[in-house]
Amino acid sequence: MSKTVSITAAKRETLGSASARRLRREGLVPAVVYGHGNAAAPITVNPADADKVDGHSGLVEIGMEGGEKKLAVVREIQRHPMKDFYLHIDFQEVKMDEVIESTVPVFGEGEPAGTKQGGQLEQITMELVVKALPMNLPDSIKVDVSGLEVNEFIHVKDLVLPEGVTAVTGGDHIVFQCRVPHAQPEPEAEAAATEEAAAEAAPAEEKK
Image (cartoon, rainbow, N blue to C red; front, top):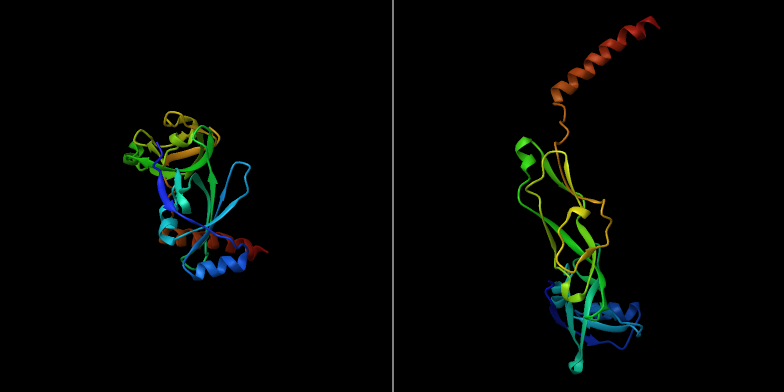
């Protein structure tokens, strides 16, 4: 079940890039709450609350001025590509009786049996798109990988999801695999092979 994160927000009256830059200089993060057919609600949150929702795939309770509360999920967080600060956050307001889609991180648990035969665990799918009622959204999906032998896979269709949660990501997508890494040739052996190939090519060049 999803853990609900609570944050506070203030309405903002001015829009546009100039206004957003001013808010960032004041230490605030511009954000928007998109509703059900309603006009988008521009808000600001403080960086500490932005940290709380960054990477959170579950519910967010947004406490507004005047006591109003909105229940939402995070749709997008934009960060500056070079500097460590938030540019913008998009929230999507939800209803408790309405099924929604959300992106949830996937984590492996345990050590694959195949590692004893030289195998290496590889995670192919880092996140899973799921749909569920808001109250059933998981914070993450944990997968037991201990049974994986060498050259075996765990697909999305093999996952045991929490009750009330279904995967939107295709069932044939590989989530984890255990395989033996390709051996890299030793530098000495590679150099010797190059010299041998060059020696074999020399007579042919002389004949020409």
